Length: 278
Ligand code: 13P
Image (cartoon, rainbow, N blue to C red):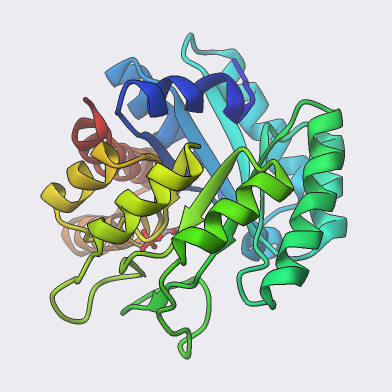
């Protein structure tokens, strides 16, 4: 069944586990993610980034995920990932997404706050949850999100407190050293900053840039308030690598390749679900 993020994220935050948010852009990624949730019997978040509107419309993404979710007995949340266009966000709310991310992290603090507040008012009136972002992630290797010039700006805990209180946002994406894409060197993750943000904000926090982040770092993050962790690059990488291997070994019908790709997605999602457990 389809649920709103608020229905599932509070429990994760309280009981110190994280929900997996897995980026999808086609049937194989949507279905592979939900299949993994069913296998492990946990709620999953299917994240459709505004970036992938060239792959399909919001309406199509919603129809597909709703249909997949109706066939299973786990909670599935359809989330609009990284969107700075408020018209697209309002459309997603009207269509039935259970969560939206307004990304104003590149804007001056006051502007990000004012826009996020506007999104929260509209979304909350319809029971839809809102994620916002403060601070900024650097670009790693093979990232498909943000831009190559993105620089690390750590989230300021005092600003985060002010932002959360003013906007009434449901969860906040923080920047503590993870990158979008794969790490170019050894990750330097600031759990001390995360701890301070969590103490000051007391709401579920979100970690972007899950791909390649060491397991002990993910676990320490969950211990300190992270209740949702996003993964994109590693899913895509696994599917592409497995597809190349398959094609080099045999001639394959596309319908069979599609099933193999679903399994590749499922494999990565299950790996992360196991790490996110308490
Ligand atoms: P990765 O591509 O590094 O896994 O990051 C995904 C993400 O943060 C989606 O918003």
